[in-house]
Amino acid sequence: MTTVLVLNGPNLNLLGDREPEIYGSATLADVADTCRDTATDLGWELDFRQSNHEGELVEWIQDAGRAQHDGRLVGAVINAGAYSHTSIALHDAIVGAGLRVIELHISNVHAREPFRHHSYLSPVAAGIIVGFGVAGYPLALHGLHSLITDSATQPIEGA
Ligand code: CA2
Image (cartoon, rainbow, N blue to C red; front, top):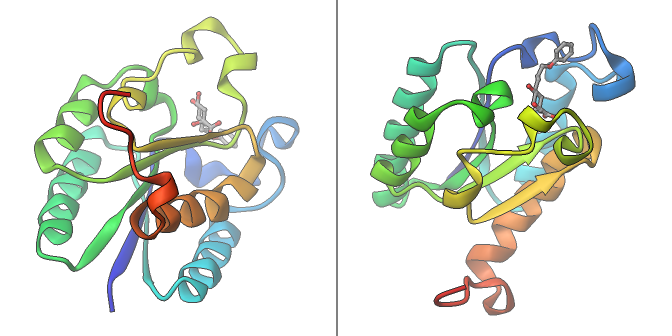
């Protein structure tokens, strides 16, 4: 069975703990459970991870690129947290690994501070889910599924 990777970046281990008005009250363990149910429905195994360390995220992206190349992985949903707005290293890792990525943000980053409006991941993501709360995780998994199975959502050349 193929696997889907869900990667979470810095401070997302605090989900459900603080700032519920922005991020909701679900914990990261709750999100993992929801993702596992959705992955099972889509016929995938789930690999769900979180790290506060940029280099560890880079290494996981490199591993994921190899697994995708070997047909063991369908791609990744990545909420890189604040590294989305700062990390050329994550951008380069995604490109270098050739990893199929759906970028995800729980909050609507475009309705927040200007420094959250730019993401180094967006130009190298196949799709982006923003502002749906933690419900964005199953949406992103469904989006990834339709990207690889449904010709209507195949990337348009030059677009
Ligand atoms: O909306 C998102 O998912 C973000 O990626 C979350 C990041 C933020 O830096 C991005 O701009 C948008 C922050 C994750 C921190 O999560 C917390 C959750 C609860 C309490 C404190 C932090």
